Amino acid sequence: MKIFILEDEVVLAISVQEFLEDLGYEVVYKTNSQDAFDTIYNNAFDLLLLDVKVGGEQNGFELLSLLRQYNIATPAIFITSLNDIENLTQGYACGCCDYIRKPFDLAELKLRVEQVIKLHCFSSSKDIIELAFNYKFDTKNMQLTLDKTVISLSKTETKLLELLIKQRGSVVTYEMFWEEVWGEWIEPTNIRVQVGNLRKKLKYDFIKNIRGVGYKIDI
Image (cartoon, rainbow, N blue to C red):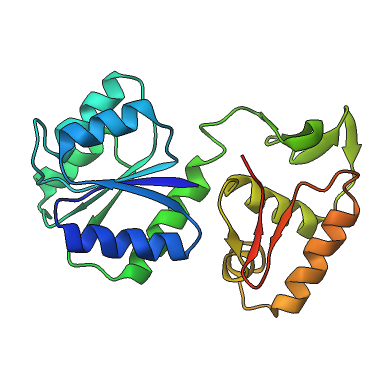
């Protein structure tokens, strides 16, 4: 998953970038709205984290409004010290999904990011996601197929695969697995067993083991 950050406080931007990269996300940041627009327009991102008071031709509100005019529907979270109802109203009117008020805890940022991605990842994509080796995943029926043949998966295996597909291109850590699939702490050994059972059902294995960290599916 690829996240874009617009933040003119360089120290904060780097701190957030490193934190999100440690979670397995690919992160790009810019410090002014013009560079931000050019980068977002020319690249695909899964989430935008936008400060409001930034340098450039637009502030964060105006930037998101402009992006929406260009039919860029990437979900966005505003990160800002502005907290009155008028600013909240303006932000949501521009098309944001959520607000994070400065100063904030990185643990809060993690939760907000995961929630927005969970809600919007599949809703903004095609019903059928094409994977390696001609596999396809039906996001409506939650079915994996190979050459039109449905591969029978357990409920847990389907949830594991769903998370890997949502995060495709990024590493899914063991922590992400137990949080998203089980909702409680699970031994990494148990997670490896469950992923192993899933991989045994794949004629062509497209799930990569990132030793000591987790698993990933390439885009």
